[in-house]
Structures are given as C-alpha cells and as structure tokens.
Image 1 (tube, rainbow, N blue to C red):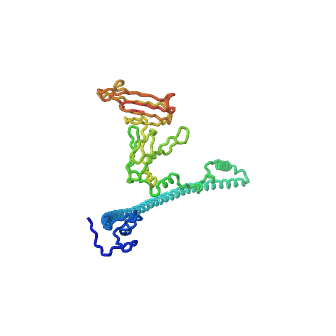
Image 2: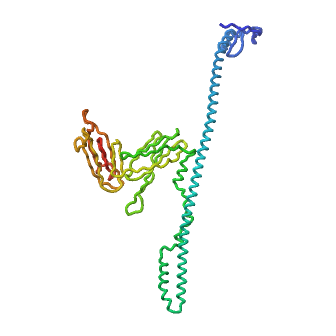
Image 3: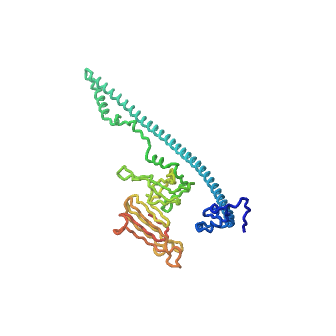
Length: 428
C-alpha cells in the first residue's frame, strides 16, 4: 500500500466554497474540489476521487510509463544505429558504383580508341591500295599516250615524204595505230577509282558491338565457350561469369562455308541465327545444321545494364555424310545438302552372345528416300522396352515408319524416321 507523502505546502482551498479544504481531485477536469463540490449534482460527471487515491494512481502509472519510455528510447537508439549503418553502406555502394562506372567507361573509351585506330589504319591501307592502283593506271596511260604520240609523228612524217619510199614503213605504222585503237586494255579515266569511294568500314556489326556495351558495360562475358559434336548433335556449354545480375544468354551461330549454286555466282543464303536461353541454363543443343559445313559460335549475357560484349568466336565442323548417330534419346534434325537418294540404316540390338543378327533379336532395317536440297531429315532414337521380366539384355522391338504421304502433316519432302530400339549405330 502507498501512503500519502508529507505535504509541505498548505492544503488548497475550494474556490467555490470559501474556506473549505479540497480533499478530492478530478483527472477529467484536472482540478481539486471540496466535499460540497463533490456532492453537487453539477459535478457528478467530473469523476472526483480522494487525493490519496489520486496519488496512488499516479505512483502506479509513472513507473510503468517510465519503463515503456525507456524501452522506446532503446528501440529508437537501435534504429538510429541501423540507419547510420545503412547510410554508411549507401555511401560505400555509391562510391563502388561510381568507380565501376568510371572503370567501364574507361574500358569503353579504350575500345573506341582501339576501334578508331583500326579505322584509321583501314582508311590508310585502302587509300594506299587505291593510290597504287591509280599510279599503275597513270603509268600505263603515259606509256599508251607516248605510243600514240609516236604513231602520230610517224604518220605525219610519212605523209610529208615526196617519193614512194614511205610505203616500206606505212604498213607497219598503220598496223601499230590500229592495234592501239583496238586495245581494250588501254586505261581510261572512266575506269579509274575515285578517292571518295574509300570505305570507312563502319558497318552495322560494329554499331551493334558498340551499342551492346550498355550503359556500364552490360553483362560480363561467359567463360570457356565449348562446342562438342557427338552422335550428330552439337552441344554448346559455357562457364557462368561472376555477375549475379545476369538475366539471359544469347547464342549466335552462322555458317562459314557457303557453297555456290551450280551455274550461278551467288552463294547459299546464310545469316546469323540467334538463340536465347535462361540465365540458369549453362548448355544448349543446336540442330538443323548442314552436314560438312563449318559454323562459328559466340555468346553474350544480359544484365540490368544491358547486353554485354560477345565472346570470342568458336568454330566447329559439322560431320559430313555418312553421318553416324549413336543412341542419345533426342530428336536429330539433318538438313539435306544436295538432291539425291538417301539411305537410312539402323543397326539392330545385339543377341545374348554379343553377335548382331538379322531378324529376330538382332534385326537390321534399311530405308531409302529421294530427297531434295534443303529438306529436313528428322530422326528419333529411343530406348527399347523389354517384352517380359525374363527378357535378356538387348531384346526389344524394332520398327520404322515414314510420314511422307498425302496425309502427312510435314512439308513435302520432309521425312520422319522413328526407331524404337537400342541401336548400335544409325547412318544417314
């Protein structure tokens, strides 16, 4: 229990009832009152209580409120510490980002200077080539002009002769003049190269390379791009660069060897093909390649700043016909290079003794198709299903079907071969 403190000041008196001591207090109206005020009906709603109860109430509430305030102050202090730490981190990240921007733009500046140096060298080299060609053309022109002037002088001399002795030289001079007029190799001004035709070599690929650097350089280059050719399938793999903000990869490949059509000078149409993959993927299978042709591959990454620089070009040669495909469990698409008759041979499963047999447990099938250039040959090799629980290793069903028919959903000339087996090899 709480006891009233010793009051050193006199007890307040009531302002309404003169001389009456105030023994009550109301927190609602925040004032003292005497007994007459408390009993007055006009003050019933003011909730007066004895001064002793009022003091007890204050002493009960103040410590609890003090504790809550102190806890609040501690929380505010912790919050202040965290905010100051975050503020320092913001300053550190700002400095790091500014340093990164400076570094990337320095790199960008070096790349531009390097490209500028290359362009100047190209212009100088092209100018030297054209200068040499023009000088050779000028030399030939001077020689031809000298020969022509000599012929004119000789012709004038024979016309001035007073006797018929000029006939001995006339035939030689006239033949020389005719040869000069009929000479198609005589250089002319119309065939010369104008100096204004020097190419600057600022082509779209260069502009794309510059724009792909992004604001602060774009995504970092993927590392160790590898091209593996196995079982008729080209599989690309690469290492993940040290950049947690990468969102996507882009692979670009293009045929290098371009065979000309018979009777024409135009090469087979070929343009870079782009394939985009997710940032979580580190490999990609490429199909629909032409056998016997060489391809270039490169890769770049995309982050929050944009596309990064392309990697170094990696080259591979897609196998020629005959094309042997081992079991991969994947669909293999082969583009037909020339018109002709193509044979599909599927080696059957091995018997229990390891030997391959025709028919029965080691069936071998063969199918021939007349295909046109640029048709697609689509093959699928799947693992066999055992016929029973006691089936020996290598047993399975072997079948093929051609969808080259009027009811086929494929384009004319497209063939789908389905081999349901454990194949030894498949040769196309």
